[in-house]
Each structure stands twice: as C-alpha cells, then as structure tokens.
Length: 369
Image (cartoon, rainbow, N blue to C red):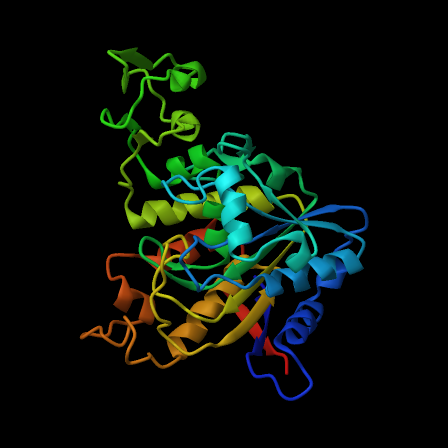
C-alpha cells in the first residue's frame, strides 16, 4: 500500500504571521479544499475539556476550522458525545455549560455546539463496523452520523488506558454514545449504588429487558436479564448506576479503533492534531499535569492512523521535560508513552487500525513553513 501523506507545521510564529494563519495554511496544503462542502453539514469533533483542566484546545483553533468550512460553502457545527463517567459532561445541559465555561460558543468559534448523543446520552445510531473483529455494530451519537462530512480536531496527549489520545481516540471513543462507551470500556454489566438510588423508577421505564426492579425504594439489576446496553446509566438523574472499567488495554484499543472506522466509513473525512501542552493523561480529568515534552506543532491528513503515528513519533523524538511526570520516571522505556503508562499498549491501537483498513501505518511527512 502506498504511504499516506501527513502535513506538519511547527509552533514558531515570526512577526506578522499568527499560529491560526499557520493552521489554515496547513489545512489547505493538506488538501481540505478537495472536499466538496457546498450546503453540506460538517461535524467538527473535538473535546471541550472537563472544567478545571486547562490543556484542552483553545476555541481559537476550532474557529479556524469552522471558518474554513464556511468558506467552502459548508455548514459546520462543533460536537462531542456525553461521558460515561460522572462529571461535568455526562448530559447535554451540563456538557454545553462546560463547553461555554471553557470558551466554546458561536461568538468565539463561529458555529453552534451540538451534543451528538442528546440530552442523556441515549440518542444514538447503530452503525455497522465493516471488518470489525470485536464489534459488529457501533453505537454512535446521532448528530455525528447525520452529518455529511466529518472532521476531527484533536489535542494530542498521553492517556492512562490507551497509551496516547489522538485522532483515533477522539473519533472512536469520543463519538460513542454512553452505551457505546460502555461497550468499549467494559465486559461487565451496570449495577446500582443503593445508597444513592432514590427509587424513582425512571430506569425501569427505559429497560427493554425488564431487568430492573425497585423494592423498598431501591433499584436492582438482574444480570441474567441485562444485556449491558448501558441505557439505564444515561437516564439516571442521580448517577446511582455505574459500571466498573474492566477491559484490558489492548481490547479497549481494538474496540475504539472499530468505532472510529464506523464513524468515518462512507463519507469524506479530514483530521487535524495539535501537539501542544502534551499532558500525560486525558483532558477528561478535571485537572491537568504539566506538559511532558515541549510544544511540537500541528499535523493534518486525510488518514487518522498515519496522523496519529506521525504525532507519536514526533513526541517520542522530543526531549522529556525534567520537571514533568515523564522526567520523573526513573527507568525510561522504549518510548515516552510506555514510560508514563507502562501497563498500556498503544502499539495495538495502530496495528489494529491498519489491519481493518481504518488507515495506513506507513506515511510520508511534508513540512510546511
């Protein structure tokens, strides 16, 4: 297979040229104008950042992408899906408030914010996974699948479960509904925290398997009947229902890759990664640790796999910041990500993505000044 093209520009800005202008130039050099966006809805998938975390991408980057879409006649919107864990982004109301708190609004980005899987994370589409080995279908936020064109805008960083968080994770995990995230994360089934449950019975009305019973004002789940869809997690207003994250890293990576393939298959897609403030853990945390390497630059490609690999290799080639979590690791392993999170297996993410045809693990890098 012919290698994929990845385009790169560094973070240097000489007098008279802004970083945002460099980002637009990068997108144009990478070929975004090849996509016919006229009167098409364009989903721009990014992470709005958990409030308290300051390493997420600034809204300014999103505005550059949205403005480029509009210049090409498209109708852009920024999007993400609700989280499975309990936090400030677990339902659409709080999620949009968190996005606004972090600066994402039509005023700052030039387009609307739409939470793709609806109010409680249950508005989803079951999408076939072509060539899937672990998932035959993927539960994806409806608004993302309703879009005609898909663009991912990713803050590249480390991750405590998948090794790194790049375009593949932004697409696969990020576009899964709450039930989809559960399917990727967990081989088990949800359970009820009896101390928190109020016995409101909302969960019972949404359970298609009649697996939930309420006795003495406390719900319980019959795991013999439960199919693990996770819908009860999304509809519980007091966060009394949860699940243990118990999937091995290589299985999580494989399922996440297959979800990403379900999202991009059959429509135009384009991918951008900003490699700055490379924190050791995910932007889902309500805090962020110091960057582990110096800021590197911006990457763009039609191939999310090649893009991620280019980012990985750029980070691994950079020196560790001595005062960071990476600099404190006594025994440096073969790469920065394995050094920070030795129990993870990021290589499996790239290998499986190439195997099922999500993208190409071979790439050529074109540097844009």
